Image 1 (tube, rainbow, N blue to C red):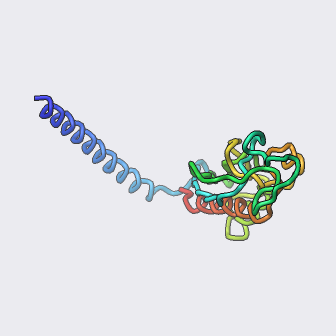
Image 2: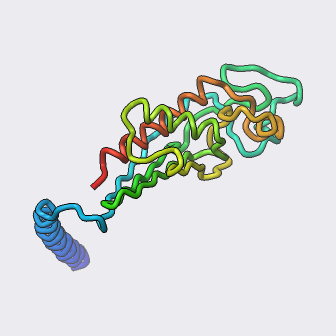
Image 3: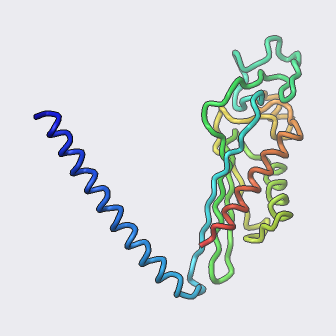
Length: 200
């Protein structure tokens, strides 16, 4: 009796979910068909969003705090690796590090773009480079003045991104590695371009 009751409950729930999906598909199809015939007016707001996995290389310093096992053994004596100087290199990847973007455009000509990186911070150099890389590859959704750039402030994200010596020696991020900073600026640009393509 117990097993057959479980099968019946599972069947009933599956039928409910399938029915709900059919309703969602029918309603979405009707809305999309209607939207395709409606012209864009000055009160229309278009939005596009994107998330890009930055795929950081193993060995980057984890920014945010530098003590205990994250600090080189004889700090402030440097221990140079490909990506680190005063902090120990990361040893793996537990979760993705994302670059996210949201682009907004109104039918009246207004626009804005927001971009964020899973990092301790995003300085002006990283943000400006990301914007310029995106523009060079066809980003036209907004101007620099309409662009907002930030970070999630994770203490387990990539370091070596900022040229500011205070960040590097606090020590919060380690010394900037130009190739690393460029890599993350390009990923932010990828997110902006993907969000622009998705404007709808």
